Image (tube, rainbow, N blue to C red; front, top):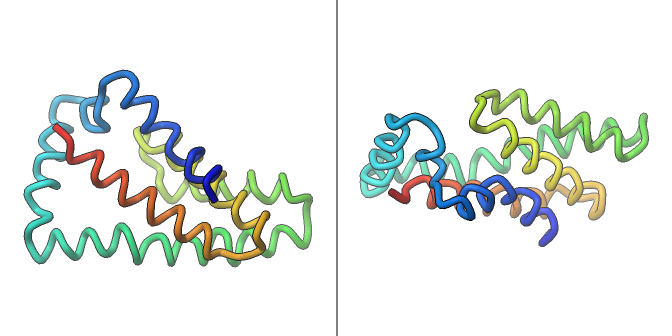
Length: 141
């Protein structure tokens, strides 16, 4: 699980090492998005966004991509192929240029957890931690 967390955080580690926040890595208007996110977290809507991002999305996505998809693929193809296919399909769900590498790293990390443990629970934990860290990091100015 620790290895999966490291893999999932590689894109953010690169940005941090280069002195950039997620939003500063793009256009200047992205910085305003991070500031709005930070401001909204003290509201009911912001709390809903936090719950949806950190709890609901990881559960649903891991159930679909690592539970059903990866589980089904592993009975038909070698594990490495199943991991790559599930990670690439996971990227299509997060099809934004800024998120492609991050989604691929998260998909590979959580798929690795699924293959190693034969359970989606470690992947859910990794995914939730990744999303929580990403939300926190994106609010940095």
